[in-house]
Image (cartoon, rainbow, N blue to C red; front, side, top):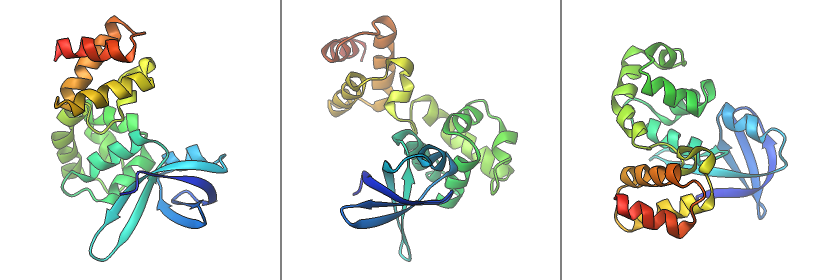
Length: 195
């Protein structure tokens, strides 16, 4: 499975990017959010979601893991396909989508082309709890200014120990509120006491 492609940005349009890596050009479908971030770059890293169906194989590309995680959460909702999720990420920022779902702002969600009343209600119903628990977001965005490699490593280590991601995120966030400059070892030890 491809995690990301890093290379020379050969071609960029508002809907797709072609990135060359070791002589191979990869065509990825992108959102306007990603397009805006890549516009000024010659070399880029694009995080990939590999979309595979019986009749087609596509790469959806994202400028960061956070947008990709939200995309994956959106396509998990029945009735929301990859094209609709990409349209959502082109119409609103990731934070605006999360905020609209959490605040149950049906009108904001309905303002996106291709989303009707029932789809908006389904999105809110199916995703609100997942977003509250930290689903559909890169770990670093959960911890605001405390984001660093220690935080990400601590979360990964605790999840590998068998704790759920939602509980780990709560514990690590709590530790970082109490001790923002904690080292990796301190974050893990203090989080274990809270789990």
